[in-house]
Structures are given as structure tokens and as C-alpha cells.
Amino acid sequence: MNRLIERRRRLLAQLPSLDEVLRGSLVERSVRCGKASCRCANGELHVAVYLSVTHRGGRTEQISVPRELVASVRDGIAVYQQWWEILEQVATVNRDLLRHRRAQRGGVADGAGRRTARRRRRQSA
Ligand SMILES: [Zn+2]
Image (cartoon, rainbow, N blue to C red; front, side, top):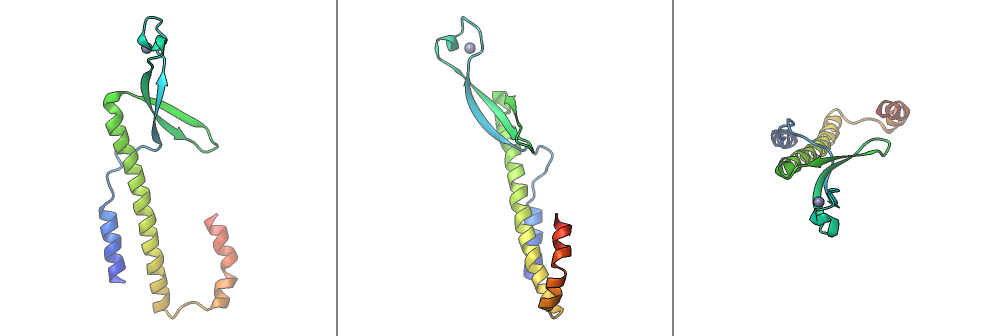
């Protein structure tokens, strides 16, 4: 159990700062700028980078990212993924801790577990 608590402490210590966190992904698109005299008018397209974010309900938002900001946007997306990964790992550790603590108390009778199953589902919804 101390091993689990120590693992949880180490995981939490790895959480990066959320200051610059971003959700979404970087996508590249080839675009025409619209100027008739530009090389892109002859098919030599510009590469534009976007932060693409999908919202609940399926709507997608795209924000163009200037070249000099691409690295920091990439870092912000990485922070989001790191938080999710650590969150999942901490939740896994806490499930193991719950099993240990339950076992220390002598466990829960199967019948009692079944009787409370309905209430538990309702709370998680
Ligand atoms: Zn152009």
C-alpha cells in the first residue's frame, strides 16, 4: 500500500504546468492566398498550420497558427496529453488502493455489493 501511495506521489509530481495547455491537434493544409500574382496561383501552394479542435456535438474549430507559434502550440497539446495519461495512471493506482483498503476491512459481502450496484451506477452518470 505504501508502494502505491509512493507511486501516486511520483505520478502527481510529474504533472506539468497547465498554464499553456491546449486541446486539439496540429494539422497542415495546402492553401492559396488569393493573390493572382502569387506563386500559389500556379499550383505552388502555401503550407498553413492549424490547431484543430473538435467540440462536443462534433463541431470542429480551426485556428491558424503562425510558424513561430507552432512549437509552443505543440508543447501545449503535449501538456494536455500528459495530464490525461497521468490522470488515468493515478486513477488506476487509486483503484488498487481501494481494493487494498477494502481487503484490510475484511472485504464487502457479494450480496451487499449487488444491492448497492444500482445506486452506484446512478452516481456515476
Ligand atoms: Zn499565395
